[in-house]
Image (cartoon, rainbow, N blue to C red; front, side, top):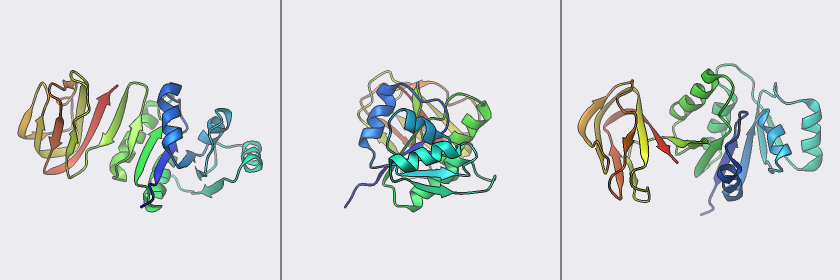
Length: 210
């Protein structure tokens, strides 16, 4: 079965090249969110799709991209969803088997928060990559990672109530707890070779430090 590894580039600040360059190399489909296409062009990142309402992309840049390569422009109007969520939904509908995202940092803090919440609005295995950490929605089936270095800092944040939460392999393990929206899940630490997280209901975001 063909692997469909998608990379979504948002229109914010990029992390260091040592973070984003391997993501570009491993992706077989790069999706730029509107104005992010300009940054892709500047950094010689080949795109397959540009998606959004195109309000942040000049006609000159569109023409240059179309001249240099075969890129599909998908104009999606509407203010109910930001361009990242549009790109995320489109990638899921297009059969993406894995989705990585970068370019959410900098600028308005509300935009950064909305980018994180997009993971909850369009649940998938998507992972956000920032300068300091990765962010992902913990799947209903649970989370198990046996390749994390010991003493790695991680945080868990609930969207609403998360019930039946269990954590093993951490400095502060939990068993059948309820995590509510707030600061309770901030800065735990791995202690064993495997970190495992499970829960019975709710939505849970995992922030894993680099």
